[in-house]
Amino acid sequence: MRLLRTLLVFKLGFWTGLLAGAAVLQRAMPSRGDEESDEVRLVAALNGVQLKSRATAFRGGSMLSWLGGIAIDLREAELASGAHLDVTTLFGGIAIRVPAGWRVESNVHALAGGVAVEVPEPNDPGAPTLTLDGMAVFGGVAVGAKEPGAEHVAA
Image (cartoon, rainbow, N blue to C red; front, side):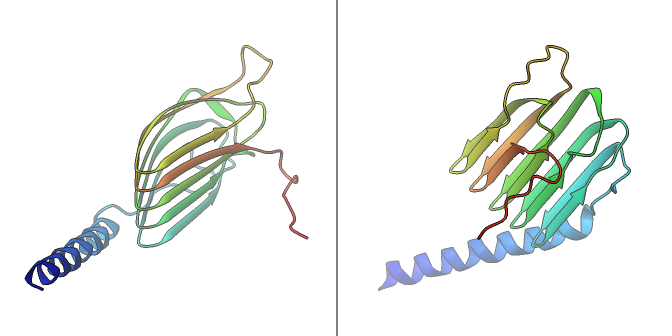
């Protein structure tokens, strides 16, 4: 019984600390960037962030998801050379949608989470390249390519 009580108190303390940390992070690091921004800093702590970029020279930026989710659509953005995104997720998720003609190089590592980059390799050797670095801890990062207007409709 004593072991059970100790485990329960530990678990309650762990989750309370995690939630309190996310709340502090949400106030300390607000998201920056809009649909016209060439560089973004998106933070989703205990909430969700959606962005549809129309940047004319998207350079990248950073994304942090802590008990939340980020969805960014880059299909209408133009990529600058050397574009780089730092992605980090802790008990959350990040979804990035890119046009089919982009090359995506992922250096994202997962710890009890997952990383899925499902972008077909472009035939053009000079295709724009987006580099991803970061970590997914008990969360996931998904990158997919689909042309604008080719949304999947469930029947």
